Length: 166
Ligand code: CTP
Ligand code: MG
Image 1 (spheres, rainbow, N blue to C red):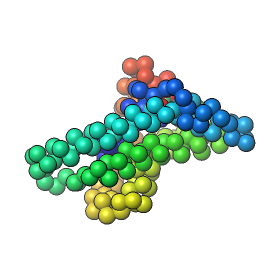
Image 2 (cartoon, protein in one colour; image 1 turned 60 degrees about the vertical axis):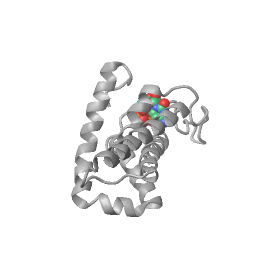
Image 3 (cartoon, rainbow, N blue to C red; image 1 turned 180 degrees about the horizontal axis):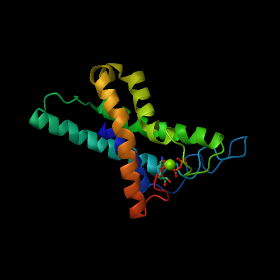
């Protein structure tokens, strides 16, 4: 799951600049996505997710780590891209609900990346997800994701990277 977990914190670290929605509003007069979704965040986030995935592939090729999922360029790209696509879709619906940038939206804020990553995987590499994300693995992911999310965001807040600790 690392290629899906790394893009969000990376986007928070290196994001900024031109927003993906170019500052445009929806007919409801609220922003389409908001200033929290930028091209730079998307670019560096996916880059970092794919980078960590390439490292995982390299390591498992070198050390032949048995039992761990075998990643491919496709699987890591789908996990990394899907994570931020999920985050973008979440922000779209968050704005439609009238929630401001950075406002809390429990469950959606925590699981957007998992939903996006799994959606892309199911669409473009279903055999990977069906092979490796077994029921116990899925349960582990559902338990670990909000914990990691909380810890990393707390850390980002204390570092001054995130404006809110969630
Ligand atoms: N970020 C970015 N580009 C992205 C995703 C995130 O630049 N595609 C950066 C933004 O600086 C953002 C920060 O990472 O403020 C934290 O991301 P997130 O919590 O997803 O955004 P929020 O600011 O909370 O906005 P939203 O309410 O839309 O989730
Ligand atoms: Mg947020």
